[in-house]
Amino acid sequence: MNKRFWGFAATAALVALAAVPASAHRQWMMPSSTVLSGDDVWVTVDAAVSNDLFYFEHQPMRLDALKAWAPDGTEAAIENKATGRYRSTFDVHLTQKGTWRIASVSDGLMGSYDLNGKTERLPRGTTTANLAEKIPAGATNVQTAESNNRNEIFVTVGEPTTTLFKPTGKGIELVPVTHPNDLISGEAATFQFLLDGKPTAGLPVTIIPGGIRYRDQLGQIDLKTDAEGKVEVTWPEAGMYWVNVTTPRSERPEGEGAPEAAPAAPQRRASYVTTLEVMAP
Amino acid sequence: MQLPYRIVLSFGAGATLAVPALAADPGTMDVTVAIPRLKVAEYHKPYVAFWVEKAGAKAKTVAVWYDHDMKANEGTKWLRDVRQWWRASGRTMSFPANGITGATRAPGTHKISFTRAQLGVQTPGQYTLVIEAAREVGGRELLRIPFTWPAKAGAGGRAAGASELGAVSVSFR
Image 1 (cartoon, rainbow over the protein chains, first blue to last red):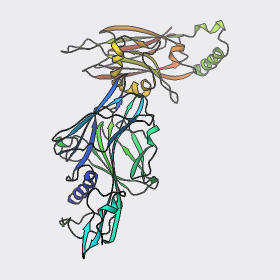
Image 2 (cartoon, rainbow over the protein chains, first blue to last red):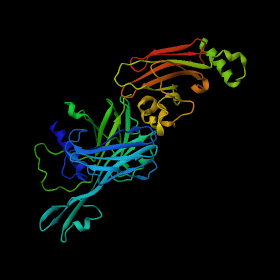
Image 3 (cartoon, chains in turn cyan, orange):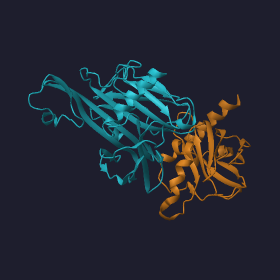
Image 4 (cartoon, helix red, strand yellow):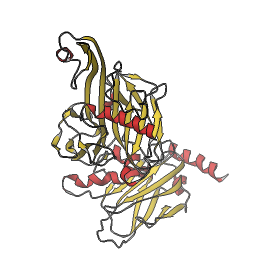
């Protein structure tokens, strides 16, 4: 149990890193609806970082990197943005039929360099673009690894479409074998995950149903992507689910909470978060 | 023995519509639907969808009762709450839908009829009429009544709901 918890904490820390540097919790976006009908359709989204899913009780999610795309691929406006003590909130006016994407994507560089006999970590906010100015003169043994964090949700007006699922080739991305807005409890769903555009085996996939506060067991589903980068899940019940996919990493040894230990060679890291709504049949 | 015989007949009917001897095949489905009277503080007449399913074929909506006369077509916002229908058929449609859209009905017994063309029963076989009701601030219920096409005279089916629908029956003429 303890081991698992640490695995989680590490995962969540990475997820949160880009948007909310100080937390080690689960980052999530919660749309008011994912399956919509009508002619003048809006979605309101809450966005937060917390332990319990989906309760805003810790930190708001920062909206700096947030974008939305209409089904035809054009970028759409994020309206009525607000960030409060525990959560952020915003609206998207869904002016087209089809599947919309709302995503917060951040890329960074992690790593270290040696200077005056000491090993220093690259500061937060280092990117490929600004790496040169972040490294002081005289630094040697510069080691870097890219990190890509994607937190995205999908909402659909009318019939689900797949025009928005063309991969960018960066970080972890979802390819819908089953459409993420066409999920029913008791049915199996299959998703494919790409790492840097390629189907990747062995990526750990964590699925947790919402409503944690009112139950004793986490109800976590642990999966690993197969040779084609795919996972299959049969939804045990209707509700909202938090899905987290990361690059594999070694587990922290139990009891040795020594995050300030000398940094090992940096590893290329990526994480993916989405919130899926599973409907009752 | 009876069934294959009828199927052969109906192929004949498809090929030559004018053969008068086949007029005996029922061409219309009558559906009787009871919408229960509910003792609730806030009552809204339910949205009700009727559709036809056949294994391996696309579901065909034959009627939807919803708030079709609100300003700016606002009543369509809740169509997705008739959720099995929305997934099976509704989400691919535009509203109002010609010949399909209808007003919501008050508690009581209602009759609605569908022609063969409306039902979309192109080929002989087993079909299911599905009736799903969803009520604002209330619940949802779905009933399925299987039927064979071409229907025999006097054929029919029935089902009874427990919450949002009352007795539903199907007959052919």
